[in-house]
Image (cartoon, rainbow, N blue to C red; front, side, top):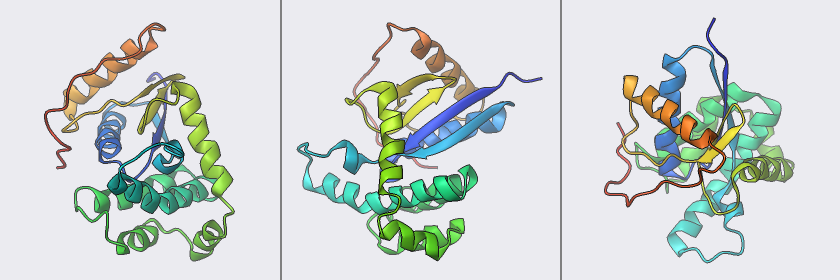
Length: 203
C-alpha cells in the first residue's frame, strides 16, 4: 500500500509562478499513489495590504480578489474538486491563453467549473470575505509574512514555492518533489535562491 502524502496548496490565480508550480504538483499527484492535494485560496491583495506595490501588480491583485473569494466559497460549499476545477479553468485562461485582463474569463471559468450563480451572488454580498481571509491566514501562518504564492504544506512541512519554469514532468518532477520536501523538513533550512533567467514557460 502506498504511503499517504497529504499536500495543501495555497494559490492566487493571478500569479503565473503559482500556476507553474501547480502544474508540477499535478504531475506529482498523477504519478505517485497516495498523494492527495487540497487546493486552498490565498490572496495577493490581502498579502500586500498597506504595502507599496506598482500599479500594474495592484490592478492584477485587485482583479483577482473576487476570484479568490469565489474559490473560498467553492471550498466551503462545494468541496475540493470544485476549487480545483475553478482554478484549472481560470488559470488556463489567465496564463497559457494570456487572457488575464479579459473580464470575460471569470464568468467563463465559473461556468466551466459548475459554480452556481446563487453562490456567486453570495460571494458578491460579502458572505465569504472572512472565509478567504481565514484560508489566506492559515497558509501564511505556516511560512511567515515575507513570502507570496504558492505556499505548499506536505505532511505538515510547509514552504513557499518552488518558483520553477517550465514545470518538470515525469521522473524529474518526482525528484524535485522529494528533494524539496527533504530540504524543507530540516528545521534550520530557510532559503535557497538564484536569479530568474526565464519567465514562466507554459506548455
